[in-house]
Image 1 (cartoon, rainbow, N blue to C red):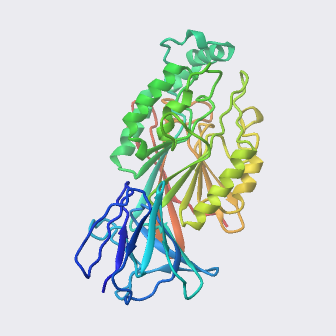
Image 2: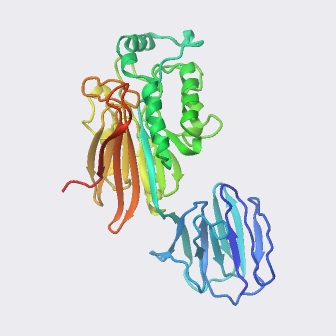
Image 3: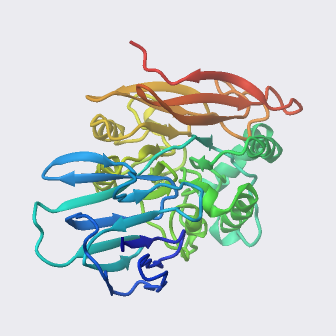
Length: 431
């Protein structure tokens, strides 16, 4: 039977048209509006009004019809989605038995509209990711790379002078880049699917530090494999026109030194939602703020990602809940963020800033959400209630009762000790 199959090439916007009754003919659409006509319409019926196609490698179709939803399964009779996760011959094939279909592409999404009168209510297909195996996310924070001073003197002010004095007096003995490099090497050896870094890559916010941190990031991984959100030390003081964290835009979902917050990065079944809590503050103040605009957009994004079936992981530098930090170090609108998250629109929240490994639970109407902090990735020695270098390793996997998250903390006990497992647990809300 003649059918029309459209395939999205990974990271490209091209389509292959297969008329199996008359052999195979391929025509690239190149993002332009094209019309494909089937030679025969006897092959079934599928009255779809809008078909959304993504470039996810592992996906399942979700059909919405008059408010009712059901997952589309592959069948031998009239498949809508042929799942061939890592098989190039069947990867991301969608079959539309329609006489005429319009295909066009906008950004990373493809839309297909059939022409003519439909015999029943329009349907809409979303593509939602799913895990065929597991997904592992490594989480680092507060790297605090040493200050780099090349050409920095025009940027010095009272806050940076005080910050440098604090570095010389105390912080340089605690934060050693060799520890961060050791932890990163350990994580890379475990081959995580993605790495998240929740801020404070640098110390004084000098132009030379942003350049050094970019080189360090490139050593951690390619932008497609690493996601960063800024911390208060990354947005430290006035930059007099220097791009600052925009140098890291490609690690924050931006391009060409442009970036905006919040941002979303879709990585397999995970959607990373990056928030920017860092604002310039006076000396001796390390507080943060999201602001009304960022909170509103974040809420909309999280709700939409939930409808698409993603596992939503929120990344922020400052502790996202009230009372997790003293006022001079706290997120000023943490109560507003907590209220937003109480809608149950996230599966995991990650943060840094406090240099402590900590797990809290936010109770929502649907489920309890784990909120996890991590200590500094570069701490060679403990300092007060701050332990030596640590990082989180989360493994997401399917379970009969839904999603389960295994949480492993790895780190060092001292500057000369090897990296080892500190703790391991499954994130299960206390009852």
